Amino acid sequence: MIYDVAIIGAGVIGSAIAARLSRCRLRVLWLEAAHDVAEGASKANSGIAGTGYDMPTGTLESDLVLASRDTWESTCEALDVPFERVGSLSFAFDEDDLAKVEKLAEQAANAGAGFEVLEGARLRETAAGMAPDALAALHVPGEAVVDPIRLTIGRARLAVTNGVELRCSTPATGFLHDRDGRITHVVTPGETFAVGAVVNAAGVNGDVIARAAKAESFEIWPRKGMFLLLDRAVGERITKILTTIPTEHTRGVLAVPTTNRTVLVGPTATDETDKTDKTTDEQTLDWIWRRAGNLIPALSRDHVIKVFAGLRPAADRTYRIEVSAQVPNLVHATGIRSTGVQSSPAVADLVCSLLESIGVPLTPRPDSRVRLPRVPRLAELSSADAASLANSTVVCACEHVTAAEIQAACTGAVPARSLDGVRKRTRAMAGRCQGAYCSVGVGFILSVQHGYEPWNVPQGEPGSEWGVGGA
Image (cartoon, rainbow, N blue to C red):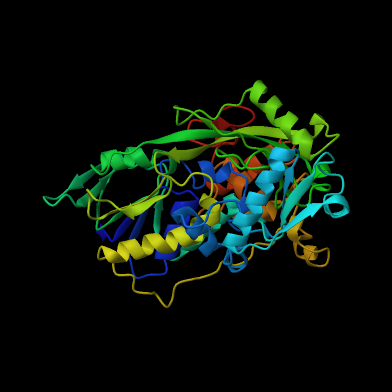
């Protein structure tokens, strides 16, 4: 069989492209090197779906963010993904910051984002209990938060439901070409696939794929960002995205209320060379904590329930979304550093138009699904609706996750096959105890659903088996 399109990479960008192509009469192959979707930067980011107020207009990045910003409500409602426009406050703490607030306000106006500059009593009223030393703040009500992991998984479920063939643990290791330099086959460790076109959405490994495909030579390196995750006791106080003034390199340190009412603090932005190193260090975490103290005063570190790092793809050229000049049927969607979640709807549309320009027919499928059935989730139901889960055992008390939700996560189009997979889909093991109490129950359900021996339930990647007891 010849696949019309092969997508390489199952992060937030690859999933957006896969979901979009699944609505067309195409045979689509989707390859992911990791054991599950959303295993790279897509599961380790701040989850902001922004208005584009904090970037200069007229770039491809800002154009795609602006084109995406009004699609979020309908997208997330269709995919059963949490989304909320909470607004943001960017604080100025000195005279230099005040000048930057004026520039931010100008950028917000150019982007067509609603905003107001707060000072004095208005500032203290809007930012009650936050950043007491701030002189002013830019308030952007339209800034939003989304669950980036459930967004990626929701798109993947929709794509697979519509017939996209997803193969995880299947890295693209090489390509075969015809005399004109067109890719004819994608090579993986176990099989070679005939393809008509290829989309390179491999994130931090986009340059590796480009070299393997004999395309342009460019460099992508990992930009490490460390985060601290704070519990809901802090989340009750933080209702908006809080940030210091953005720098040339980063938006600054943020405090971001997540869609499940915890708070993310970070990230840093350190250019690295190792594309697999997600370690954290105490010195950097201490620096983040000190900076966060400007935003959230009198904060105890006892509220920290997890620390982690993600690797964002930084590149010699940001937002390389184009048909390769060297390989006529290869489309790059790489170099998307910090705004991949925010721009992903419009990125998918642009990639589809590029595929069409090289001869891939995007004939709509009238029978394709455009929405997913809603999974009843105890933590997201009203007290009246929660009766529908009355007979299901609560497995994760911290996150209010039932056995029924975990069983649903282990079945369907893109099932969880590991403890990490269940956590990403349900939030089980992601609360205050970080799985200390509920991981045995989750592991038991996984063993029943997939036939694992209880002591061989995988934590994540193959070889990460976890369990109790022994054979």
